Amino acid sequence: MWIKVTDDKGERPSLPMKSAMEQIRTVAPRADALRVVRDAFEQAAAATKCHGCGCLLHAIEALEQAAHGVSKLTPVLDSARRVLTPKKYDCLGCEICYPAIASNAFAEAFPDAMPEGAMCPTEAPEERHGWPPLPGEYSVVRYAASVAVCTLNSEHLAAELAKCAAEGLAIVGTMHTENLGIERVIRNVLANPNIRFLVLCGEDTRQLIGHLPGQSMESLFASGLDEKNRIVGAKGKRPFLKNVLPEQIQAFREQVQLVSIIGEQDLATVTRQIVDRHSEGLPPFSGTLCNFAVETVHATEPQFYKSDPAGFFVVYPDVRTKQLVVEHYTNAGVLNCVVEGLTSTAVYAEIVKRELVSQLDHAAYLGRELATAERCLRTRDPYIQDKAPGAPMPVKGPIKADNCDAGCASCMT
Image 1 (cartoon, rainbow, N blue to C red):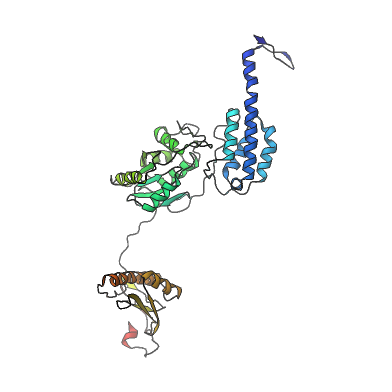
Image 2 (image 1 turned 90 degrees about the vertical axis):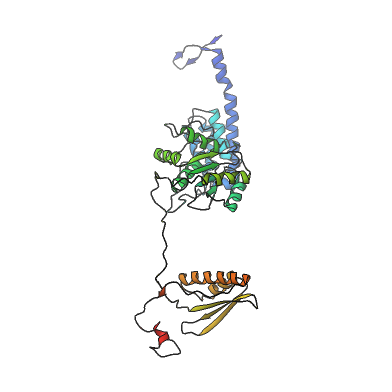
């Protein structure tokens, strides 16, 4: 059966009835989608956490670019814009993300309305000097270690791994998104040539947002990006990498070996992977694209030390009272304070509070001696206070003490 369709200029070729009915049937799903969009934006406007989130901002901007349905959504988008505050974060990784629900519903109902990837946040945080260069939800353990761990949506696992600090663990954190989340991992890993393995573990759920960062990372290693900066084979809603260069992605894939145990949340199992990978002993990556380096300084013993203007200390463990005792003298040799305590921590905290030490090297020396004295107090080993490292700093003239004449032997040292 055929029907005739006319325009303002007259008749056009007839269309099959089946095609016309298909067009009619799309009206209801699109109307439903617009209702979902309106409801989701209303909930986002009522949720304070959404006001400063990049998800809401980018959802508004994306729908404003759309070719269909904007006129019906204009009041909704205007209302949502009124609650926006300066952006505090790109994405919180919430289990229920109202802007994402709105964007996904609109994109599914109007698949040709928006450019692909228009809903993805594009702003990367400003890089800082040092490692890691980008902020994120992670814990740094050791720069020189070779294993980075991403626990995806399992925050408790990341916390447990950071606390255990297994041998070989450099950094551990979560990753909630397959765009900015993966970009941060790439740039932070490239900034540390010691990292040679990336362990993916924890929960990688689609939830209502549609993010699958773990599966997207696997696809990145397997297939890279297409010409539109989309991760080939990624199943998440927003697998677009806009803030990393192709050469950075290539270097990342060369530097790091992916160890994917997605879904694994057992602490012992993940820890064993960290230890085993680190034991392979891979050298630092030589093809790094990092534009800065963390300085490694080889320390040597000091040749001289400068007397602290605040005075000096005599440390001894008192076995009888089971306390550490520290006597503080002025540089004229006058005792002006005695600090006693059960632990080295208690003693040096009181010394710092009373400002009895004024130089960092003197404070470091005192901390070392207090720790040694505390150990001797517990083991009953004899304690002999060590002298400051190096020789006294040469002085141009005599230092006159309060109780002697200039020129005496003690004042010339």
